[in-house]
Image (cartoon, rainbow, N blue to C red; front, side, top):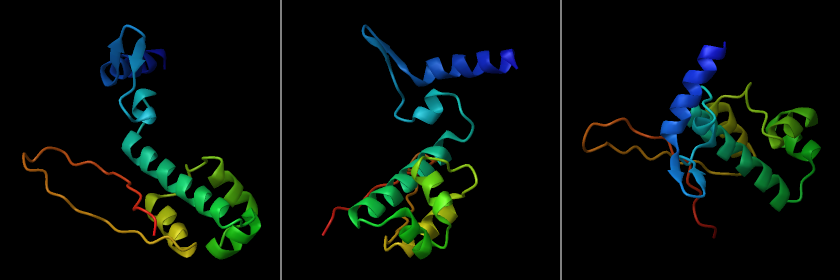
Length: 126
C-alpha cells in the first residue's frame, strides 16, 4: 500500500506547480490528492454544491427537499455534506431537475483530437 501512495504523491507533484510561496493546485483538488476518477468527483462535487445552493436559496428544509427529490432527509444531509460515493453523475442530474434546475449538455469536439474534458458551468441568473 505504501508504494501505491508514493506513486500517487509523485503524480500529485506533477499536477501542481511549485512557486516561491508553495504549490499551486491543478484546479482539481481530487486530482491533486491523487484520488481515483478526479474529473468525475469534481463534477459530482459541483452538482451537489448546486443542490445545496438551491435548498438554501429556496429556504427549504432538508426534509422538504428530500420529499421533492424522493430521498429521505438523512440522504439529503449526506449529499449536502459532500457524501457522493453512492451517487452517479446521472442520478445527481435527476435530483437537480426535480428541484427545478434545468441541465444542458454541450458537446464540443477537440480540434487536435486530444482528450476532452467535462465541465460544469452555471448559467447566469435571470
